[in-house]
Length: 199
Image (tube, rainbow, N blue to C red; front, side):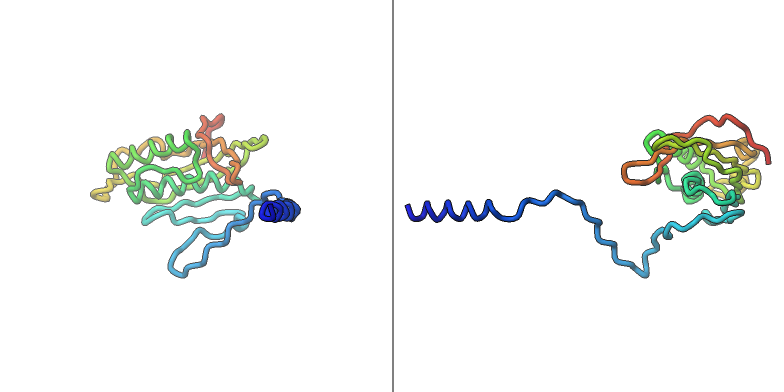
């Protein structure tokens, strides 16, 4: 009887402890910095005006940023740089910051060139970058792309492929972007542009 009384007293004391606190997620600890591993640069303000970006050996792009560029424009530039880098380096597929539909579209394009033993060299140009629509968690980003100074080459021999493909002439590119629950903007799909581009 004495044991039962003691057990009841302990249960009563335990029940009168602090009220349970609601769950609050905490930030994950920051990873340790490594001198040998190169991580992506911290997000800083985008430049205004022209910027030359080295993509891979022999391939780069001149980005003509507008004055006070919307940070969302970086999504369009990053996918251009990433897909061209995949082609030049012969890496099948591309999915960085792309949702499923856009991953399929980008991967088909990259893989088609790799399967044909094609690569690229030269300097592309991205200009007339703009966010043409934004609603809730979605946005449309438009740009003009000029790859007339980019040469399609054989990945085996390095020789220029003839004839020069039509898609290297100035063309419009539009994407639908989506702001994910994790705070990252990703391209949801590539769209048919409503307007063309000139040099």
